[in-house]
Every structure is written in structure tokens, then in C-alpha cells.
Length: 432
Picture (spheres, rainbow, N blue to C red):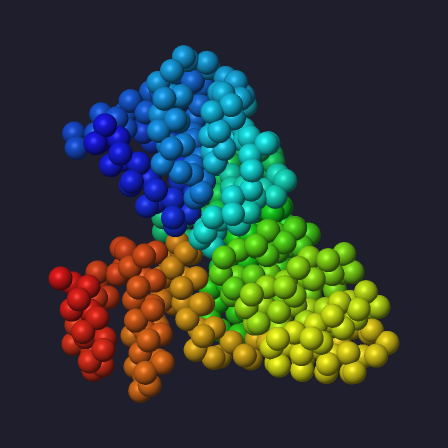
């Protein structure tokens, strides 16, 4: 039992930084003498149940982990659908099974929406949303050998950080099921980065993200949250405006626990200029953080029209003077309710303030890509002469340790003799 609880604790820690996929093919190939027997046993259990993988959501609880263990060592069903029905009856909702027979994930349709705190990569899932299975060099039976070879090349491109080859190989997958299997959240985040590196034509990148549906829009949103440069943010905003799934994905994040995430979702809904977004934006007018309410006011001004104008008039009694003033300026500037252009530019300029920079740096810790790691390292090493700048560097160090531990140790050693006493003191504490 202590070993079981220890494993649960490790999985819980992993789940806080994103979804966890337990792949049977990886578990059963774990032949290293140091690998616990339980790892191999789990791989065999998945095989007996006719599963290729189990995906655990960020919101999964310790109780669900223990019930899942009991489910896996129970009667062998060999059918992912039956297994999921049993999981539903046991209230194990934060999970999906990848069937070895169909090559598709099976989820619980009646699972309640989780309201607990979650990382940036885990919004409230909408209908049909969710990540796809990881690529594998050993695909289910029935997949042609050339497709298996392409999966291997995609894995290799990811390992090398070769976004150009990754986009090319991904684009060559013609069948939707093959594309969905390869287009994992990590792969799609790397695809999005090609918009900023400009080594792949932007129309090709957009086509891949469009093809990925909500997963593509979600990967773009996560990159947007973590973009430091205003130019990068503008480019990512433009990319999201062209994706059909953007409105639905933006709505998923309206209930997120971090105000900065919600604010960006609200801004994106305003970018759509769609009257259908007014209702969702209106919910943000009641947000506890005035900065989110401010963004909602700006977005309603972008959309314009009598309905948006009526929503703005309800804000004229907001407790924040800034929100009231912004709403008044829009109402009087457009008495006929016409949309006001280029208001987002002012919002983006506000993000030069330290409070926004701190949120962006924290978001970089949730992107597991080489570019995100490089940006954090840049912030860590940037010399500053202000208290706020030093705090930003410390936040970057923390984000690097949390999201990119492979580069954190070297950075800590590099900063041991930093000119800033605050940095040296924090580094010394981390190295103890």
C-alpha cells in the first residue's frame, strides 16, 4: 500500500503540469532492471483489457487513482467501451481509454465539468474537445508500415526540435485518424512555434492547426498566453482569428482560475467581431478582477451593435473607475453602436506592465517546448536595475524549474555569481 500511495503522489504531481498518458507499448518495453515491477504489470493489464493507453486528466483525484487500480486488476473485459461504462459507474470520470481495436479514445460523456484549479493546458473540456494519443513507433495492427515509419520520424523531429520536418511529416498524414494520433498537444505547440520562427510558410502552419480543430486552436492559445513580445502576440492573435475552432476554445477558458488567461480569452472573442460572442463576453463583465471586466468592455466595443451597446451601459455602474471610464468612452464614441477598430492595440500595450509580464513568464512554464525554455532562459539572464525586474527574473527561474527542469540546474549554477544580491540569495536557497 505505501508503494501504491507513493505512485499516486507522483502521478498527481505530474498531472499538475498537464495530462498524463500511460502507453502500454512503452510500459511493456520497460526492461531496465531499475524499473518497478508494477510498471510492467500495468502494461500487461492494459493489454489484457484491450487498451493501448490510458489518458489521465489534470483533475483526477487520489480516490479515482485507487479505484482505477481496482478496475484494472479486476475482470478482463477486452473492450474499452465496457471498461469505460464500468469506470462511469464507479465515478472515475477524469480519464479516457485508447482502444487497441479501434485506435480511438473512449471518454465518459456524462462526466461533470471540473471546477477545481487547473493549469493553463487544462481548460474545461467542451463537446468533442481533448488531446489526442501520442505518436508511437508501434501503431495498432492494420496501420501501414509507411505510416508507422512516419510516426517514428515525427517522434524524431520532436526530439530534435525540428519544426520544419515535423510540419512536413504531419502534413503527409492523409487519413484523419492517423493525423489525430500524431497531432498531440506537444506536437501542435511545436507547430504553432513555426509561425514565430517563420521557417515554414504561415499558410501551411495555419492549415495544420485548422485541421487539428479545437486541439490546434488550444495549442495556439497556450502559445499566445506565454508570448512575451507584442509582435509575437499580434501574430498569434491573427492566427487564432483565422481558426474556426477559436470561439469555442476561447469560451472554454472563460472559467479558468487565472485572471490573465480569462482576459486573453475575452479579447479573442472580441476579435471574432461575432454577435454570437456577446453573451459569453457578458459573463466576464461580472468577473472579480477589474482587468478582465475592462477587457470585456473593450471586446464589446469591438463587436458593436445595439446588443453590445446595451451590455456596455450596464457597466456604467461598475465599482472600478477605470472600467466605468472605458465603457463611457466607447458608448459616447459610438452612440449608434458601430464597432470600434484597433482597440486591442491599446490592451496589448498595457502588457508592458510588470503584472502582465509576471503572468506571461508563469505561462511559459506550462509550455514544454525548446522555444519556451529559451525565452525563460533569456529572462533569467537579462540584467536589470530595478526591483520589479529582479522579481521578474526570479519568477522566470521558478517557471524554468517547474516546467523545464532539464535546463534549470545549469541556469542555477550559471547565476550563482549574479551581480544582483537578491538573485544570488534565491539561487543559494534553491541549491541547498
